[in-house]
Amino acid sequence: MPRLFVLLFLVQVALAAVALISCLSADEEKVKALPRMVWVLIILFFPLVGSIAWFLVGRERPAGAVGVTGAPARRPLAPDDDPEFLASLNEQSRREDQERLRLWEEDLRRREEELRGRPDDRDRPEV
Image (cartoon, rainbow, N blue to C red):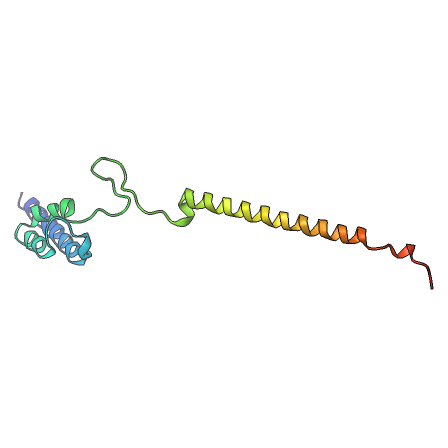
């Protein structure tokens, strides 16, 4: 039985140490509910309850963590993962291709008109 108490005490100390490091290394804007120094004091004076409270209430949840409603928290997407961004790229590429094709067709028509308007070399009298 004493070994179990020693083990539980070590788990509590380890949890408090991890919570303290997490609290001290968190960005100031990610600390919720109370100021950082109050969280440090709570973790130091009430290691088990304070550590659990820090992880549940005191810090902002990491991106992708499940929220209170059970739905995953929305995180920003990288451009290559954002369907709207990819659709806009496809649309922009399609418009550029259509414009390039239109310019090529106009250039081809202009060249054909130039060739039709120019007299053929066979029709000239030889000198």
